Length: 292
Image (cartoon, rainbow, N blue to C red; front, side):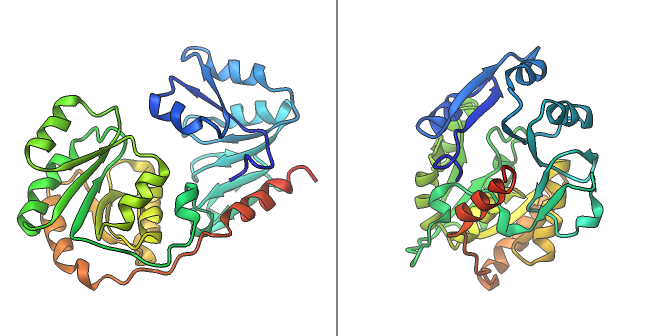
């Protein structure tokens, strides 16, 4: 959203092949050493940059070190620490009073700020849907929740196509097991490929993340839960706004029962009307306030 007006660089540790592909033509990618990445990043700053931090391990002290360099700072943050940033961004929350910030910090909240890839920000005038349900539970799905959900879906929707959205961090044996069960595996999809896939699907089993917003703008009914702490707040917001069919904590033993029930009410779900076509302009306007 920013690279037409800003020179952008992505700094990260051990970037995957997928990340490298996604960065191509959009921004430069700087690989940081795992042992010294925090200091190395600070050393790379001149002091005239706008820095965006997006991870849960960035401490208050690290924020302050960036600010002390002279940089403007934007944090994608939760309400578990104090923020020294110029802008605090959280599109899962709605109440600014829960955040601990500096007096001059601007708090930006709400789902209109959801960070979506370009194909999902473009208006889609029509959907050509088929009986397809997708499972999209993270780049690694470390708890193997896809395998836990699969038999429930196959039993509830015996005539539907099933697809698993995966990355190259899935073990090959898992991919083979899905394919042996006649499940399509969609691996390392670009934003455009993901959007096209979503436009043809009716439902998705997913976690409380940006995927929910991507699904909703494509007319996909999200059966959504959470499995790590940092998803729970977004899940609560999505449930409160009736944007999802809720599955709750997906690590609990009752997941199968809740998923089965969710599949029976999916046709009664009313999709909210979301329009992100002006999001790029919205973000550029926000970031331009940092240099005025």
